[in-house]
Length: 105
Image (cartoon, rainbow, N blue to C red):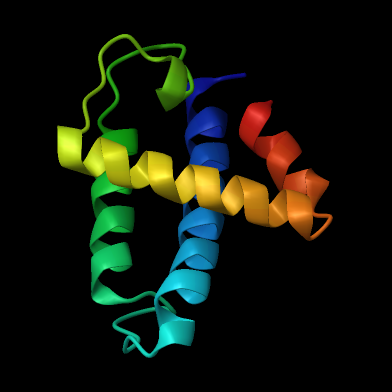
């Protein structure tokens, strides 16, 4: 898969996984929507993640979880891992294996 196609796929996954995490953990619990269906914290995480994604120097671009560089700040890395774990389980529990499949392949 070429780098541009990989980036578009990863961008789609990031947006969907962070949106589900935010909706289920923040917006439904009363946190105010900040922008595009995300609370401020999740929108900042999305922007940070997309910035890291577009700046990836590796070609072919690996999945971030398999990368040897780890360009995320430690705090942001922990947050994105939490988001991915929660959203992955959410999609499994709700029968959305297509999203889980996209995440792994």
